[in-house]
Amino acid sequence: MSGIIQLSPFELSLAALLVIALAVVCRRLRLGVGGKLLWNATRTVIQLSLIGFVLKALFASSSPFWVALMALVMLLGAGREVRARQKNPLRGGWGFGVGLSSMFVSSFAVVVLALTVVVGPEPWYAPRYAIPLLGMLLGNTMNGLSLSLNHLTQNVRQNRAAIETRLALGQTQSEAIDDIRRESVRTGLIPIINSMAAAGLVSLPGMMTGQILAGNQPLDAVKYQILIMFLIAGGTGFGTLAAVWMTSHRLFDDRHRLRMDRLKG
Image 1: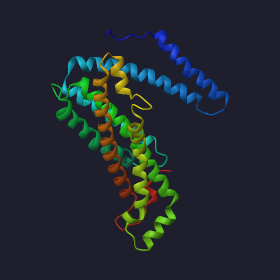
Image 2 (image 1 turned 45 degrees about the horizontal axis):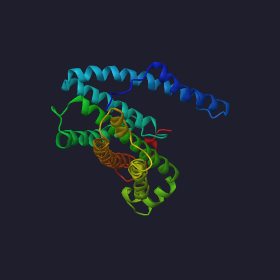
Image 3 (image 1 turned 45 degrees about the vertical axis):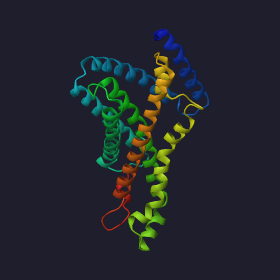
Image 4 (image 1 turned 60 degrees about the horizontal axis):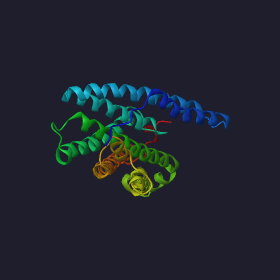
């Protein structure tokens, strides 16, 4: 098979015209997202360009220190995004810490398992495998956590009276919020469930498409895509469960009283 077709800056600019055209339409319709669309498109170009240079140097060195540092930066960024995407996150360091710790426990554990047991590169922390796997897991887990925690905190605010009534009738904090907590976890799992349902039938997922474009055989690309989707499902599921449990526990004090002052906004 022939090598990858290289894209020039001019060809990328043609694709960028689609985003610019969409931003113009949004502005004409007064949707209020045209400027944000252009700003985030610019951020995408800058961030991906920078990470391209970083990964080039990282792949050349294969130092475990630099791999760990890169993973830490990615984790901190994902934790910040989880908090930023919630309308009413927990106040103080809790809003950041819940997402950070949940993704550390779930995504990092799943990636290490995949690298050491399933894929088995030499060395096991080889950046060509470790960083892309971690990036895909963190990105999807981040989305699941954001959806589930936003659903949890919003519904607790809206159903405050009902929760406090249940507590007054003798229910524990876990019983009073159990239905909201279950629905929040379900909400966080919807994206990955939908992705698995549509994979191969409606869409060709990103990693599989990338490997095919890079010249790999379709069946080899399929195997890696199946692996990635199972890892994402596990990481998102366990991360969401941990985050929802920690947040719901934080919303009550030791006397089983609902503490709305612990939510921002």
